[in-house]
Image 1 (cartoon, rainbow, N blue to C red):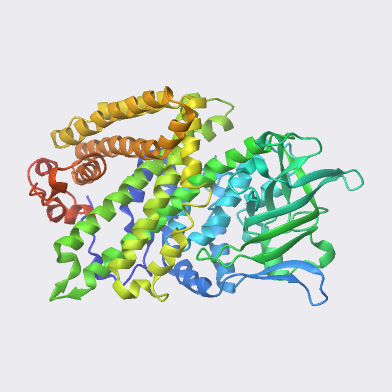
Image 2 (tube, helix red, strand yellow; image 1 turned 120 degrees about the horizontal axis):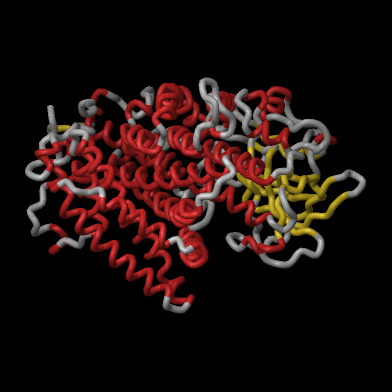
Length: 608
C-alpha cells in the first residue's frame, strides 16, 4: 500500500507528473475501467500526466498572456478569417492529440482490438485541465462532433469523421458547436439562422449570426439552422456541418492551416469571423462572433432532427465541463497543499495550523466527492455508448445517465469556482497576481457554470429527466444497491444518515410529482443539489466499504466527512460537539496516508 505524499518536497504544482500525484483519479479509473482497459491505459496516462505537468503547463501560462489573435481580412480587404496561434499552443495541440485524447475512444488504439470507453477521453481531459481548461474546450468539442457524426452521419461526412478522430496532428480537424444566438441565448428554439438548399452547388447554405462561438475556426463545426417551412421552436431545427474552408475537396486540417498560413479568400467559406470576445479567462480557445452569408454546409442526419442530435453532443460536453471542473479543483488543491506545506508563518508551516488543516481536509473531500460522482456518470455514459455500438439498448442506464449528467455539470462547476477562489486565498496576495496559476484557474473556472447550460437551465433539465424518462426509478435502485453493500461498523452512522436522507429525497420527488409546474420549477435547483448529495454519499460509502475490505480506512474518513458536511445539521453549528476530525484525519485525507481499518471507528491515526 502506498504511503502518504510529502507535498513539502515540491516547490509548486508544475514540473511534476499529475497522474502520479492524483491517487483519486487512479482509484476512480480502477473502479470504472475493465481490468484490461486499466492495464493498457495506466502507462499512457502516466506519460500524459508527465507531458501535461511539464511542457503543457508551462506553455499554458504563456498562452494566457499571448493567446490566439483574429485577422479577419487580408491586406487587400478580402475575408480570410485567419486565427493566428502562438507556437506554444500549436505544440500543446500536437502533444495532446497525438497522445490519443480523442482518437483512442473512437478507433482502436495501438495494442487494443477496440476503442477505449469515452470515460478515457474524459480522464485525459481531466488531466489536461490541470494545465489549460481553455484548450480543453476544443478537445471536448472535437470528441463531441465525432460522436454526432458516428451516430447520425450517413457516410457523406466520412472524411470529417476521420479528421476528428485522427491520431496524427497533421491529419486532425477540430470540432465546434455554434449554438448560441444573441436573441436566443439558452432559448435555442428562438434561433433565427436559416438554411436553403443550393441545387447548383449541391449543398445547403446558411444565413444568420451566431453570437458565442468557441473554437471559431474549426473545420468540423456543427450548427443549428431552420430550413424552408420548418416549424418554430426546437422541433424545426436541423443540424449542419459548416467547415472553415469551402466545401469542395478534402477537409482542411489544423496542421495545414498552421503550417501553410491562412486560406486564400476564394478558399474560405462564405462567413465572416467578426471579432474574438475579450474574455475573463479560457484564453486558449478563440471565441467570437460569426456571420453566415450563404455559408456552404452539409445536413447531418435527418432534417428537423437537429436539436435531438445536438443533445447527444451536449451529454458529452456537459461531462467534459464536469471533468474540467474536477481538473481545476485537482490543480488548485495540489497547489494549495504544496504551498501550505512550504509557507512558514509564526514559526511553522501553515499546514500545521488547525484552521488551514480543516480547510485542506474539506477541499480534498470536495474534490473526492466530485470525482466519484462525475466518473460514475462517465461510466454510465460509456456503458450506454458501448451498448449502442454493439446494436443493443440499455434503457435503465440511459435513464439514470440522463438524470446524473446535468447535475454533474451543475454542481461541479460551482465547486470549481469556490475551490479556485479559496485556493487563491490560501496563497494570499500572490494568489491574486497573474504570475501565479491560481489567478488563471479562477478566471478559467468562472465560465464553467455558464458553458453548456447555466445552473437554472440544467435544473429544469433535471425535471425533464424525471418527468419524461422516469429517472427516479433507476436512481432509487442505484442508491439502494450501494447502501446495501455497506456493512462496516465505521460506516454505520454515516450510512444511517444517507439512508434517512434518501427517504426524504424520495418524499421530495413524490411531492413535486403532485405539484404544479411553477412550484416544481421553483424547487428544481434545490432538488438537483439534493440528488447530488444523497447519490454521492451512497457512492462514497460504497467505495469506502470496498477500501476497508482491502485494508485501508482512508475513504471511510472521506465518506464520513462528506456526509457530515452535506447531509447533517450539527447542533450549535458544530462548535459544541468537541469534534477534532480535521486535525485527526489530516494526514490520511490530505496526504493520502493509509489508515488501519480497525482504527477508523476509534481514533484516526495514519499508518507510518
